[in-house]
Amino acid sequence: MAANLSAPLAVLALVTALAAAVYAVVRLRARRGIATATQRATYQVLHTAGLAAEPLRNGLGATDAAKAVRHLRALVGAPGAALTGSEAVLAFDGRGQHHAEQFTAAAQRAFDAGRSLVLTARDLPCDRSDCLVRGAVVAPLTGPDGDATVALVAVVDDDPAPGLVQATLETARWAGSQLALAELDSSRERLARAEVRALRAQISPHFIYNALTAIASFVRTDPERARDLILEFAEFTRYSFRAHGEFTTLAEELRSIDRYLTIERARFGERLQVRLQIAPEVLPVHLPFLCLQPLVENAVRHGLSRKPGLGTVSIEARDAGTECHITVEDDGVGMDPAVLTAGADPVRRGADPADDAGQHVGLSNVDERLRSVFGDEFGLVVETAVGAGTKVSMRVPKFHPDVRPGAGATGRWEVLS
Image (tube, rainbow, N blue to C red):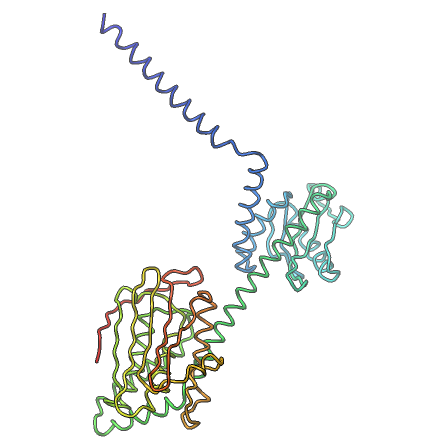
């Protein structure tokens, strides 16, 4: 009897478990679906706008325009949509692609008039029997200056309704603001490249002359050392004038600094002492190109070159959690703190005109680049006094959205005397 009852009981238990699972899934779906229709519509619009924003912020190349127009059509709610310039359609999605020439001509009229246009079937003659296009809205994508070179065209199967016209205008206004932000990003990148070019142009001809003179002094007495110095000088200039990359790693910057100091020690001899204290874990940290090297150059050139006897430049990089703290310190002649508070360039430490002060590498340039990339709280901090040397400190975040990491560099640095 027990054996006869066991099978039905097992089936009943299985059915009960399955029913409980189905009930749980239904409850879960119901709980997830408690959002109102307004909330769902808001989410859908914002989500679609976010998808369109990325290709718009990248500019309007063929691939990005094709991605953007698909999402813009969804925002407008039209059967077809195009992004067109004054000469050709950049990208099309949905119906009406065979009207490309008419849409381009309409866009040009909209640009000339500085306003949107509403096209009806009379404006879009077509001899195709299967054509469903009966109207379109052409809305220029205007930026802050009011100029436009791209228009959003919303294509419809009937006369454009007021709601579609308004939706197209608002979508075009939003898309225009995204293009303006893309141009702003591009302008910022061009400015950063210009600042780096300015730093390269300010590499002291006096240093180049002194380096070559120092190398020449070893050609007869120590040819092997002269050869090594020539190679170090070549690598130093190659790094300083490299044509790619707005950012570099701390390891790469330190490697270039080591070459610079090798050349300067050949000139100053035992008068120039160098001390490095670098935490290995911060070597891969990314920082703006040529933002540390100028600090070292100024420490040697303006702090130690006019000091009698021995002089020491110390470079320290410490791991500070989410940041890397870097200091460059010298025990040279220092400067009057009032020069800093007066807003003068901290590198002008009262040097005589013969020291090529007019061609100095400005610390203000480095300070501005650090602030523009990481924020105002990440500028240079300078501590100095007459006869007491100078200490320049900077903080660099290990991770930052505006920094595009490249290949990390590795290496090990030791404390040198």
